[in-house]
Length: 213
Ligand SMILES: [Zn+2]
Figure 1: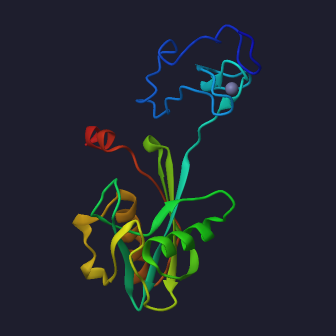
Figure 2 (figure 1 turned 120 degrees about the vertical axis):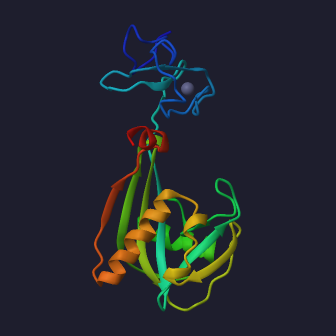
Figure 3 (figure 1 turned 180 degrees about the vertical axis):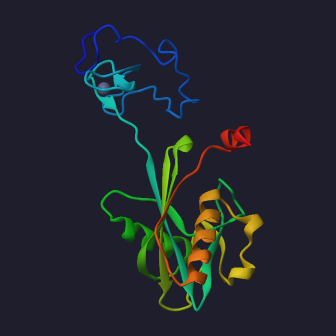
């Protein structure tokens, strides 16, 4: 089979022959080309350093990159807006309004849109606040800080309930994700000091963290 862009000699190597367990490596298993529907194989394209899924017929290379999740810590008169998730994962747990960034929007627009969709709240964005790299799930979480223009909010389709919480009432044991808990902790520390900064953190997988203890 002749195909453009793949290194000669590695053409027919699949993930298992490259010694890679795709799922363990956090790589999606792609079976068919998203351009022409043909079978794909897994190999290192010419000039590249990592194996990719490459189409047997049209040669299309299926690049996969981390996804950006964008959200906001929004407050009104000292209380912070949280949503109780109506969807998996972590259904029934509280989260900051956040979601996958869409094509064609800025990160600030994504934060505003997600807050409107999930919490029915219109916000004024102040500044980027926290960025959390979560390499083992191929995601980056970016949180802005901002304010509600008015105390109007309502549960969107992805939320069971939305509420404004005083710091002492934040349901720490019922938060959805580690990035959300981390962001809220950093936010409350900054707020009490009166000085907000930008926080960059990398979260390791829970298994790696526990084995390092
Ligand atoms: Zn193809």
